[in-house]
Amino acid sequence: MALHAQLGGTVLGLLLALFLDAGSAALADYGWGAMSGVGTGAGVAFLYRAMSQGAMSVVVPVSDVGAVTLPVLVGVRFLGERPAAPAWVGIAAVLPALWLVSQSSPDPDGGQRGSVSAGVPSALVAGMGFGVQFLAMAQVGAGSGLWPVALSRVVSVAVIAAVLGSYGAGWRLSGSPWAATVAAGALGTLAIVLYLEATGQQLMTVATVLSALYPAIPVLLALVVLKERLNCRQAAGLTCAAFAVGLLALR
Image (tube, rainbow, N blue to C red; front, side, top):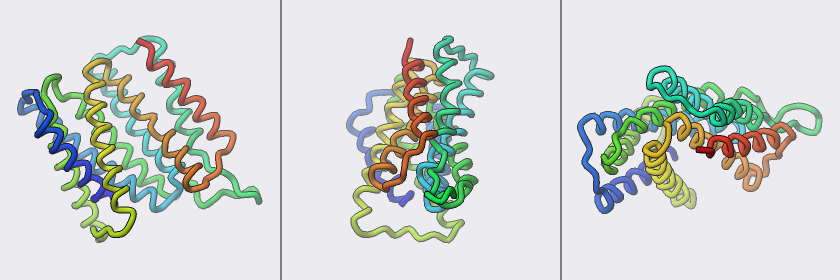
């Protein structure tokens, strides 16, 4: 599924670059785009692996830890970014929000639904991949157009194919999930295009943290579609995430 999703995103990325591109990218922009694709491919492949091993409402927020931490640390330590005081409070609220959202719902007998640690190692690897994706894409220059994004999608497909090959996984996908899988990949491409636009208008640190709050959506989908239960900690986490978004949106 990971490969087919990214193929769908790649097709959309190429079409957007062909028909909407109006920029002029330098060689460095393509290099950053390719590096972002490496991060995307690793992140997507290991996230799908994590979701096959554990609950989506757990592994998705866990994967977000690396996606948040790596770009923020690099932005502050090496790029000289200095978010405003409200933004720092919002950043500080993100990690507890992710931790709370990732707490599993208990069974009626007091136990946990499955192992809490199931899929966590793969989710952490995915998080580091997404961190590289965010960090590298933010370095693409303003006015570079969409070809660096398209290149990142192509590279991500190659990385996912390599990961699948290393695990001996099959590449075939048939039946009703195919359309939804391809659509998910296309939405991922739209998301990275919007992220690139956001980094041109505000600090990478803030744009990354806002983007990294996406686990709230899969958790809500898991509750509605998969009938996973929302406990008090997860409710508090979603509230904390909304609080963080409000602070980070302040200019």
